[in-house]
Length: 390
Image (cartoon, rainbow, N blue to C red; front, side, top):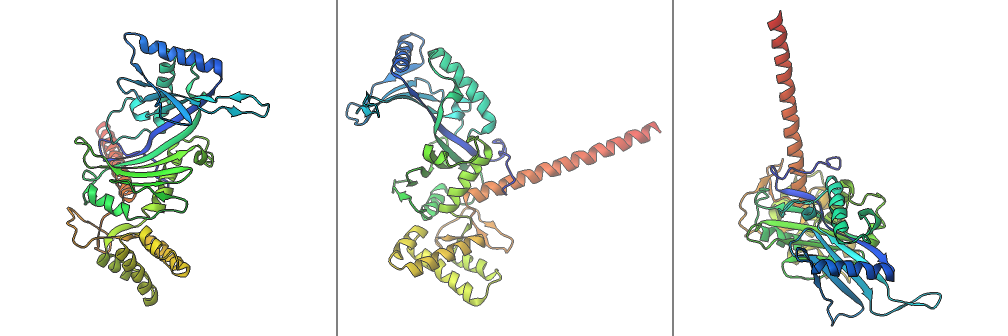
């Protein structure tokens, strides 16, 4: 799976993996900040201006934000920031730090309007060009695209559950996802309708789109802050490889590698593995325990005062995932629209990422078959032409 890098064409498959939003930042001195702010404000006053000024929240403490956004969304939001409390430098000077934060929705800036499509590396040249053109309209003081520091990137995978033929409803999928794991250093925010985890360097947010035009779409976002981005060795933070690796890393830590089965079918899957009776019974015990606790994080929480049992549970979770079995099981009373069936004849529901990769593989096989047929036709026509001339 790792070698498959191609983005699925949106006309053929209801998936997209790529960039949702990202933020750029540059530090401003007093002179540049004043000139830029004046240019932005003057631009808002012109009759044909698309910009509008949003005054800062007077109740906000710490950092003041002066926001300029577009009346019709073009994929850019400009935010001037200034600290309320002066910073004391080594020389004793008192400075109010100033900066310009730019929040970019690359899909919209690239001219794509549908909800499913995520921007990817191939879009970046056009995004850079449009950003620089928009900057020139506002002020000569605005730096070009690559003069900013990347302060945050939100990587994402989008999936239309029904169009992808995953088999369950978006509500059922979100319930299964919500029963996943919470990695170390992350805290569950317990937001209604969202699987939302936070830590100092990254946020994980998975939610179903509540929209009449896109009622069946689920999006998983991995929101990486500057601290996390600095740990990425690849200098191109927008590359497909980085995007895929980030999504995979956090997906497997929370939702997991294995597909979803009912408890009875998960046990059947274990019976199909080359395991001795002791190991099968051990894994069945932990499957039943997670099922009883209604989720992995809750199962771990119940064992927090029993380190030995907790370690045994963690080992079992790894073993289950290695067999393609998600420890989170499907409630037996659920009505599933369309089951998928694996090589053992056992019914299951794929995780979002597994369904994405399965679709990629199917698309690649179709392309190979078409290439083979085209090649055979070319050879046949070539031979026919040679016989004709003889």
